[in-house]
Length: 216
Ligand SMILES: N[C@@H](CCC(=O)N[C@@H](CS)C(=O)NCC(=O)O)C(=O)O
Image 1 (tube, rainbow, N blue to C red):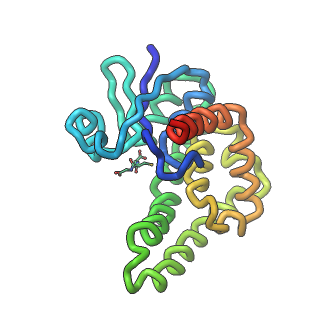
Image 2: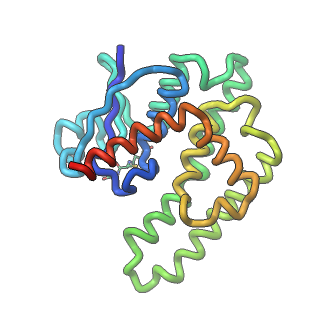
């Protein structure tokens, strides 16, 4: 059954592929599962029809037959569980790859989201200029720890896994900040993820949405 995901009708990142539908698109491309996309406006995301799929009125969602999921961690995990290619067969290696998915979402991503909020939502507050460096230092702490663990390895734990997919996607949210570039191995790690053919297909698909919206 072909799953349907939701994505922004008009992504605020203007085609940079930083919205979270990229994670789901990339996972589906990695496992070779075709999918359909339903584009939603900011208004429609807060309407009852979308809220029935996503209680927080966000994208992406994932529908497959009777199943409707939200939260990219759950969606990518579901895809990885049902298709070969994103989680190792060995039980311990699989558990470690899942650990990296959680690490990306619950340890790395929160300060990175804080930075986006500090800049985009709170940027006009009197204390914003003082707060931003504090938030960025918290990100640096995590990047430094991740950099030490990755060392010269290609991926976080053996072969590329859903843990790497999620980590690369979370780090990509720092694009333009210069923060990842402070850690040579993390910069190269993100570039390795972005060089994967499945990433490129996913990126091109979301970029096509931006192009179509701009042209028309
Ligand atoms: N924890 C959620 C976060 C989802 C999320 O923040 N989605 C953003 C797009 S990347 C969104 O829909 N923002 C619009 C809004 O919150 O109104 C996940 O990983 O799926």
